[in-house]
Amino acid sequence: MTARVRLYAAISLDGCLADAVGEVGWLAPYEAEDYGMPGFLAQIGTVLTGRTTYDQARGFGDWPYAGKRMVVLTTRPLDPDPPAGVEATAGDLGAIVARLRAETAGDIWLLGGAAVAQACLARGLVDSLELFVIPLTLGAGLRLFAPAGPLRGWRLAETRSWPNGVVLLRYDPARDGGQPSG
Image (cartoon, rainbow, N blue to C red):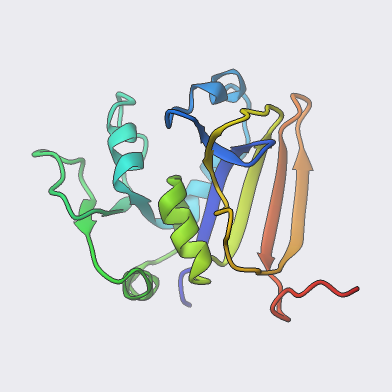
């Protein structure tokens, strides 16, 4: 079975992955809740991310992706001693994702990074959107969806809510190309 690319992310109510300076500290008040991350991680074989998100994760202390293969999209060398399982790659995004789909047991987590997420969405490489909507508006920040991104329809597959106001919205690509009917 071919690995699915899953964009699993927390976003603000106004669609931002990070604030205006690229930080995610606004998520801290929501971190104590169990949103199902262990079950999600058990389904993941490869984490695909951009360089900025990788560098940010390196500053978190303990490596949060231990035991997972991580592929970092970058043209720059990684730090001298990256965690086990981390590799850098560059080139055609479609070819990289096709290779990872074939090589990965489990699914591929498209982790953070507006530029990488937008590029994958624009190329139709995402098989599932799993968005944890945080009940905050940032006003400005790094948006998940490009302002001039392509029209693509999604089918709502799951919703879940928590008492703290967080809502999970899981979407799969619409089978008919997603044009809304009038």
